[in-house]
Length: 189
Length: 307
Image 1 (tube, chains in turn yellow, cyan):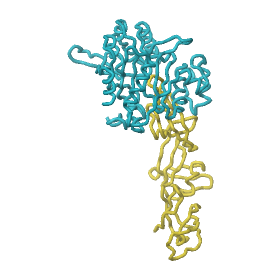
Image 2 (cartoon, one colour):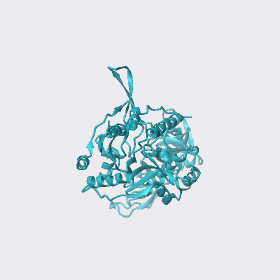
Image 3 (cartoon, chains in turn red, green):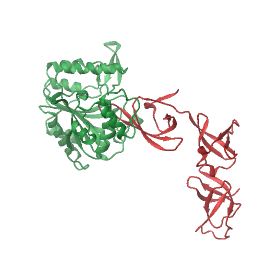
Image 4 (cartoon, rainbow over the protein chains, first blue to last red):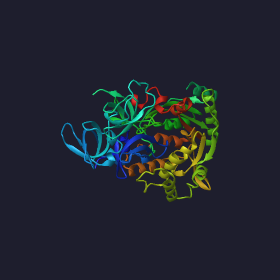
């Protein structure tokens, strides 16, 4: 079992805490001049996304978490699992719903995503900041109205709904910021 | 620095400059010295040396030689300490006042801070509270009469996180945890002198019996940050030797190297240390507070990550 001492703590380090993989966000060394030293650490639970504060006695050891991030290509969803492939080795991996929860409405086949693996199993999936998606349904476009005022909802090929300007039509490709869920612009195929 | 020097010059406190390298180190189990060695004329096989963690022992040897009041502004070294408020090499202002007890010295620290911080930042004279009363006010517990179990259960009840692996730790570790994770955060921006420590945390302070045994040690928290540590100095060589030996025993039990205890200091105490109080002030932290800086590295021209 690999372990880290508190002296190895730094942001981004992956450790096990209460059976869950976690990532260190912030590490603060706290020590009275004449007393026991502690490390006060802000930690993100990679399963739940929750951020907690934990205190360690300095020089204590903590179990390391086998967490790696890797770029995988999204293949398809079979209703229960989301399937990904390593573009180099062609090795395939299936992910359950919790890991793709935030990402699934942006997942388009062939797109490359960053998948965080814990002991080889997908823990979370991050889509690119910007994706190009086709509009499958929206109210008819108003030609010539390029004011950008107002807007209307549009359903994209992945099922996501975003607000787009009035002049954009069904069948068009649009660029969307996945962090905010906002329309960025029209894209040429 | 110029203001500090002018303060002491007005009060006829002599500036001294003692060696950074010493054949002896501190045995304090909470402080680690950097170790190095000299080889060359006189020592073909190498002479193990320590970088000092404080100029205390040399300055006490000067005091025992009747130096009178002295101060020193210089760099000290502590291994294993790096963080927002810690740099392994930092500047310490240390001074000793023969004839003063720790309460008189606290008043002098207040005078110094007024002198140094005037026109730079807002400063108000710190309140004073005993360590015992501080705990009673903030936790309802008495470090002298309530046992380790009471503090353990307080920590589990009140702190958002208690380190694992503390179950077998003694009272002092639990007290340190509560000081740094409960009492200090609740100070906010307050200035506070805390005095009268448990004997087990006496370090180099003398111990007084006043219903219970109390170490005449004090600390100053400035705007909630530990800035100063001082003692009404222990002058008894027998007691000093006993503490050194017990500190080294603690080191050995926890698997750390023991340290050469300072025989010269013990001889100086034998010869007679005048009745005095002494204090050490973290200069870089003072700069941090005065200038409102976010970390100690910003208060230095070259912090630890840039050397």
